[in-house]
Length: 219
Image 1 (tube, rainbow, N blue to C red):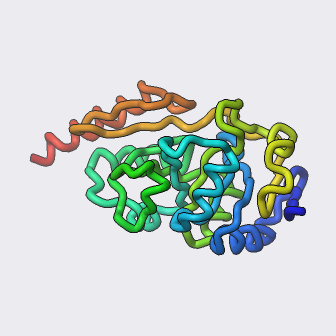
Image 2 (spheres, one colour):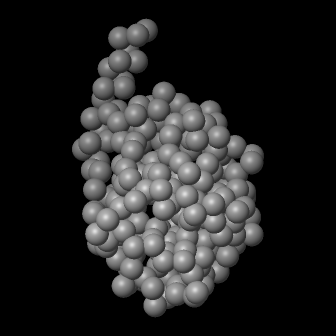
């Protein structure tokens, strides 16, 4: 039986130290973010990442993003970050925003479907952010659902698919947003929206305009 932590009525962040240890050691934890529930493990552990693919019945050709708690952790997993990419992260981190960056070689290929980029997000939900902080590693985290099913926004939607198959479940009730993050990839200094969530194309374009204006004024 997996460990169950009930945060629906009272959140005690100290209780996250145990699931954080589980994650660091390659265990699998279902936990809330501000978007939807995630199913996560140590982002550097190839075997536990493989297990997440298998539990979700997820195609190995579909990359999994990493959740980070600060910008230092971004630099642990990504390199050659452009000025515009930094500007987008400064504006939308923490929050429901995933950016595709060039990965460092230590990031497992299984996570990125053998590609040279990795999705990175810094969640704003206090539970997810503190869990990553305590774990001390980026957490490989797709949504907590069987592939093809809607993303889980409360434990009742999720438990029937994963009960007894993970090491810990953290329940904080209904997800705040209930919509997956906006995903952006910058190509030739132009942001391309791969999936639109609560952060809109207009908001992203505003960042681009400010960045371009500042870049010209600094020449």
